[in-house]
Image 1 (tube, rainbow over the protein chains, first blue to last red):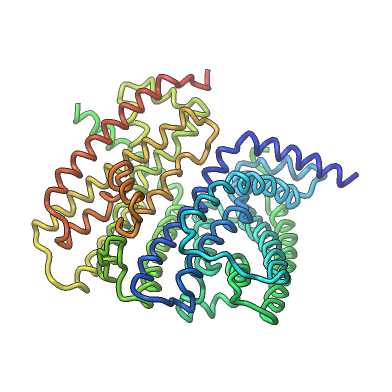
Image 2 (image 1 turned 90 degrees about the vertical axis):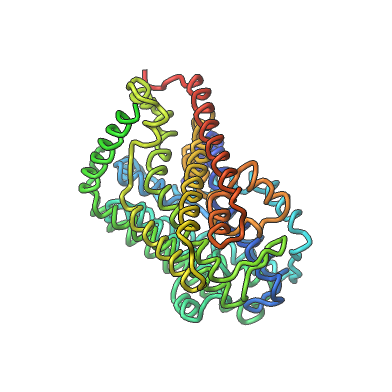
Length: 267
Length: 268
């Protein structure tokens, strides 16, 4: 019975996504273009050197190409929608329904991911074709691919939780715009989306050890490039799972506190 | 005619200042975020140039650390102008079309393009603008070798042309909202494209570079002004930049008028 309820919701979300698929294209451009520019900048740097931060040109290009795929396919963007619902008081209608709002948001975002991913695949094929001489297809064992897939799954869960927390910060922060932007920059730096963390100054690398961001992109990409192997993979996956668990608890507690702080104007 | 628009703009600015006093927290947060963005791109330069001595473009053009700092400062200047004067306006256009509030603009006795492009000003841009100027100055100082007054004047003129080109391109992309009414992020579609201009055009391979200098002339936003400042481009680029800016402004207006004919007004 419960399952059917959420299946219906997923179906409604999908209809919604179909209607607004143009927006998905816009987001895709946001997610992809920065990484592509980075590839070209690094290529200009590699014209004077062979290895940068322990990566050769092939690995660097592969890193950013795979990054575009992760940035489009497993990166939800629910924070704007959530914070707007709170600020405009639209969230009231969800509070009185017997549906878990975090789960609802996650389903909605998942529907979006499927649409974004599907639309992006031909684009990615083209990009990969254009860079074919500079990239290399990862040579991983079956175990390696499994670890990569598992890690990507955990990344997606972690992203859903972090972006949800970011969105519901609107319960306290009057205008979420700047707050979201600053968070986004921290994510950019510490997740490795900006540049691979091995190239970063020591201070940033060490600081990053205490933040969840490196487990969003950097860790799965290191598995993909074969830079993390054996024990390191296991330890990484475990830490990733611990972050997912911790953030889940944070989501529950923060949501409860937020609803209590909520005044529900406009309702 | 000019005086009337000047007075109108002054009224807009005054109104925005009053609104600003109501939303001070948001204002400071935005300044902080913009400063961080500029810092982030400097961090990127730091990271790259900790590894290599120079960037070498596709055709072999060399960009040293100092050149890149100047380019980055120029981008910060351009971006701050756009954030202060253009984005607060064009970001709203698609909503105005969707909700039909564009009617209020069309019924007023002033150019509609002027109204939708100039209504709002974000004063926070001033801060990043100054920061950009400082970065350019520091870059020039690190580089050594002075800049003549004439060179500086030409640079300022070219940056202004770059601003007009960027505005026209942004406006063109936002005008598409008349056809794609449901695309609510169309107001920001040009933002990631603009960021291509953060780097010298020479790093983009053949066909791309061709596109960025002719079809979507991003090269004239930052690369050309900096090349001129460094004495690497002939002065004839001033004529080209002026021509492109004028042509794109004309085109943006023609496209806007063409698009308005499609507008059906959702409100009544």
